[in-house]
Length: 339
Image (tube, rainbow, N blue to C red):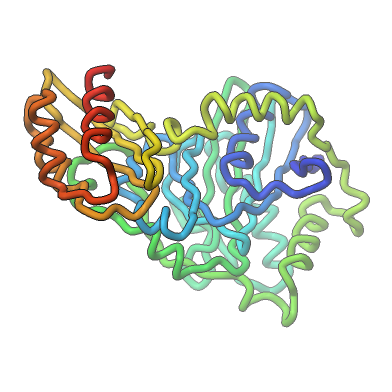
């Protein structure tokens, strides 16, 4: 087994959109032989499954207000919160998919390392969650592509649990639409309070890596360092797909179209579906504080035949003060007509 170093120009990568896309690159493009392990940290971010409806899983207003990034995985699973108090580990295998679906196989080395410290961590029966005192400290996911798989999960050391609870707030109205895969909410716990006294996050990381690789020194771990060419391809994939709001916000089951535009107050995105000329689903995604009510605009449009006259009436309902009404009308009409 070898470690995959995803630092860039000597600096660690904490960008969740970058980091979450790299497993896809290693499995589908680079295809290094053997068993690789990515081990990294993300800045505050919500990671949702490929087939999830963000509007049902996340308080998007809280997300924007607290500069939390939204990232859509290329694999399935539920919504989770990451921050600088949370590790992510991913096993990368390009020529052996025999353990696909076997979460316990990939969890075992991590569980063993923690149990060695006297911590009673277990795998939750019939689940991909790892638990301690009945609470979740790791959620696992994996995907398969040909003979390649990526399988891993979180390791909560000192996650901001309050932030996680607030941003991962379900919208019951959206859930009733039954669009996409729902998350399974569980109480969560940090490992910090169960570790030997004074074990810092840096020391915890070093301990885990030495245990996972069965070495006495980090210098003894065989490591693949990403090259300039690796980053060139990764950057291209990010620019085309994984780093875009169209992928992360727009790829929602049941919401078949996404557009966004910059206004003087900031960027405004919209997700919508029109069937037989009638607006079926519509959500506004402002990246700024709106002076007015875009929900009133959406409520007026849903269930109606879309036309310039109806759009103008809808915008009037919102009484919005910090978006130019005519520019908003033009954006909406142009978007709906191009879909």
